[in-house]
Image (tube, rainbow, N blue to C red; front, side):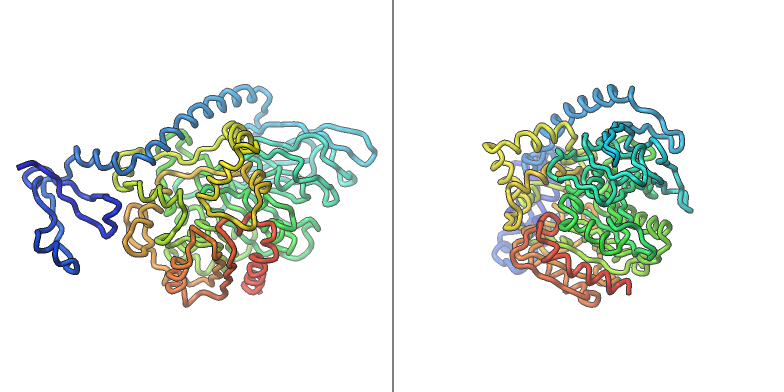
Length: 552
């Protein structure tokens, strides 16, 4: 008799994703008898494999069911290698013009900007460290967080200056003080070709002060958190309640400031009197440092969304409390950002007393009915259990500045190939009736941002479950949303292919005791919540209302 492997079928048999492959004396066993096959309502007993999994069959099925993800990873690895080599060469060339700043032991680039002052004389100064600008490394009380902040004006930009930016804006490593132009400065947003790693280019020309803080988590990740402490009108005498914005997967803090001041949520909140903080989850463009590991090491990428909820969000909230003196922080999360808030609130009773309200835009706690063509195909093809065991922890969606310039700022900006990029974008996030092709060309300059393979595979596991479930990494214990105690506001879209209404209904059922407000926008897709230039009239009023009530 031929030897064959036995399988423990799941309800989603179309995936052909066996979980066990018997070795040894049980190699010829069958899962069910002929009689049990005729009784579909009777659940057959799974065959145990005392000999353990057969490595030969395990490898065969893992490769067979995961061909597409493996090919994608191989292509990303090749592209990353070439881009990283060019980045290292560029870093070596630029290091000669950098000077160490002894106050926080960092090498800060000193690009020059040309400004025009009120007496029409031109002067050149450093946008980061010259003149009265100061930088200091300040540790919080628990010794695990540091901040790089600024005080004073940049050289040549005194209090009397009516400055207009003439040369290129400061770019590159933003490890320092970001000085803002005076409120009356007028710089056309479209005049700049953006860098994926340049928050200053999106904030400073629009008349806002920008600070970069470094929050160190308990497991050693150094997270880049940006702050707009007040609006264009200045600080004022009143205390400003803090609001923390949490981006979604493949995004960064740039998503909150990419549009104009009247259209971007971060600017709207700052002008309405809030102290706006924008966190960056581990591994993305602005959070690629660790106390022990480099981002080129596999150990750096050994995380999933669980750690973002356990460490990243919690440490940011505590840091904001220590910095501002407020006991409560308002949260606004988009996509995975809202989900991170729900995960943390369901798992940590302390956060319920520290969060005034959580506004979830297109929340994706459950993704059973997700309809994204690309992400759904990835989840179906990915044999997640085998991939997690076979592949080392690694980066997913690597995007360096060189790659961005070649593809998103190069190929995707050409009319002949732009439609291909647009079709790919819509295959991932769904078609939008609110975002034009011209707008996408701008948004591609700040998208995508990196995450880990483990983060993506965790969502694939949740998607592949027969019933809606919301559990920890690698089929761990479930998150109990019924344990959330902080007020929640849910904003959903009728054309959202990632946060389907059936999944939203499951979340509402479990959060029914804490949901304070709901808003459903029939024609909204997943990215409209952050990129729609009309969101200030459709999605953001309920956010302002909820925050005002929570801090009253």
